[in-house]
Length: 117
Length: 109
Image (cartoon, rainbow over all chains, first blue to last red; front, top):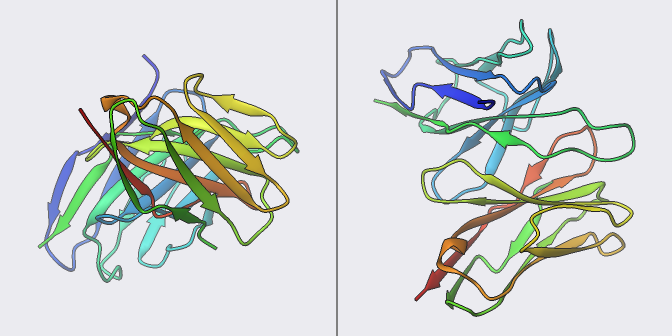
């Protein structure tokens, strides 16, 4: 079955430690996205990637880093520079839109809930 | 800039109708609607494209006023399963979405 997987579902880390969240998709999608969601809030874009070995900062990229070495994988590292990393992190993917038509739907993974102690 | 959603919350009885609005200060290429249940991933409902094309759910309807930079989601004859938080995501440029803060919908028996 095609889909997006994120692991782990729950993650606990000590303050000051870097942590990497996994995101894998087998939908053959070109575009991948990372969002952060805080309680009662909307989704805020951290980073996105349209193609392998290329990615762009979103609205809240400070304190985060990503890589896109394979089409299927888009891991997110939460660094110690991120001041308040406790949040729900969602990864999404979509097919790349045809020029002038508009974006296609995004498929979301189940999310990783990160708690920094 | 983040789109503004209204209302922030709405409570319905099963069978009642609701309208959720999404307003942007920028010109829009498309508007996307998603529903999220507590602790779960958002699920796609609908895309409204500049020019009038729609893609998505056949039991939920929506409108897109390009001139006013607004979209509305219409939920008719609501069911218990409609409960959740509804988000609009707007595409203004750069092939990325900016999401609103959400509208919490509760449908009671």
